[in-house]
Image (cartoon, rainbow, N blue to C red; front, side):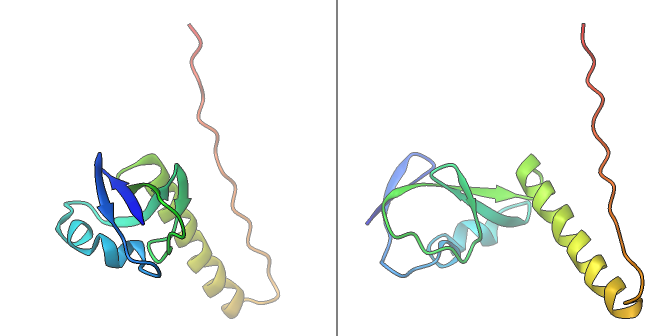
Length: 102
């Protein structure tokens, strides 16, 4: 099936993951690649496309990448906390950015 990456049409084998298909691009990236967008929908790197579409790699320096990274860290902290202190409840308060209206 045909996949578009950075404006180039490429052939991907059925059952192949994004990380297998774009392994060279992922390895040579300056910033860690942690996810991808397939047809503008966030997916894991082990996602296996079942139809043609457009792929974009998501790195940790992007807004989506940083959000994925933060949520992953929060999950790890939650799991560790709940194993050590099962009787307590951990809550995470997110701060909203203040918008300036001019």
